[in-house]
Amino acid sequence: MLKKSSLSMSLLLIFFLILSSCGSDDPTPTPTPTPTAALSLGSSVASLTFQLNPAFTSATVSPLGVRYEHTATLLSNGKVLIVGGNGDGAPSGTTPLATAELYDPTTNAFSSTGSLSHARYNHTATLLPDGTVLIAGGYNGGLAINTAELYHPSTGLFTSTGTLNTARMLATATLIANGKVLIAGGFGAGSYLNTAEIYDPTAGTFTPTTHNLNTARDAHTATLLANGKVLLVGGTPSAGTPATNSAEIYDPTADTFTDTTSPLNTARSDHTATLLTDGKVLIVGGISSSAVTLSSAEIYDPTAGTFSSTSGALNAARYTHTATLLQDGRVVIVGGELSYSPSPIVEQDSVELYDQTTKTFSIYSGIFLPARMGHSATLLSNGNVLVVDGRDPGATWAKGENLSFTPVAAYQAQFTAAGGTAPY
Image (tube, rainbow, N blue to C red; front, side):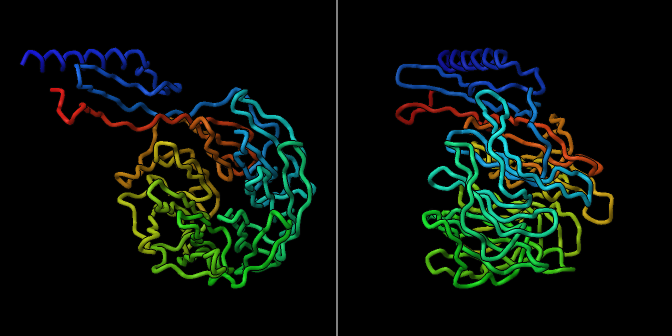
């Protein structure tokens, strides 16, 4: 009994020493090392870890320009490439940008880099195996465009590459296992598109896929699955129909599109899709077929080919938000728009965390986040999430601001002993 009591007291003393050293009274903690307590008793070791809260902090620097509906791509060197976007935050304003900039996490600073040959927003950006970035399609303020460019990190310049067979905006671009890129769907020439094409980096050309999508769609999502296939979900299929519940799988080997075993439980567009650590895909929010902003979420299971609702819904309905997988397996949901119809449009200022274990969402009330939509969120190499720009409440201007989200991994209290014998 004396040994048990001494061990318990020792563990409690270590726990409180660690807790006090981590500054637990701070409501928005700064990054700290993983707190761990360990006690050695001969061949037995007891270890205790505990959970801290994440925090958003405004960076001391801002992007060089203001933009939304841009792209942000994590480069091989750890920097983030921010390209194009709309510089006019008015509801009907269109100011396509040709500018680009780099964010360096080591210096927490933005710097200018080369400019696009063609200004654009609602385009795609894909990191290629050789470290270059493919910028394809988009909107130039008057119509969808078919031009594509490559960004070269070594020179900081953009160069032209092949031309899309179909001009398109609001399409998806997915790097597949063979190093090529699937460009699917979108909107162009007054039509919602059911076409797709493959970009070959070696040849620098775009080639139409053998078969078309089963459903035309823009503002959809495309997710590379663990089996090498691509899941395309939801989107807007036609004028007057804000969303579809259809989903399909692209097989790169067969070059075919096949409907999933079952459709979405809820039709949605302008949602997010995030590949989880277990190989399933989390589908969050969006706009419904009746033009209502959604708070529902569902999970796609690649093995069954089916969708199932999460245990809990979002605490706040939203679309045009971001959803980023953190290194600990949680998903952080940032911003978005609350109302689609009727006007006025209202941006979200809330942040939620999705827990894969409980399949529930929780609001992080300690975060004071300026409301925004059309922003970007990029997981950095250090585990932080960079949130850049977006449109502010009232849709009057594009907001130039950088926020850094510092998550702390969710750890469980854990006691282990060598040889499988409990230490007490």
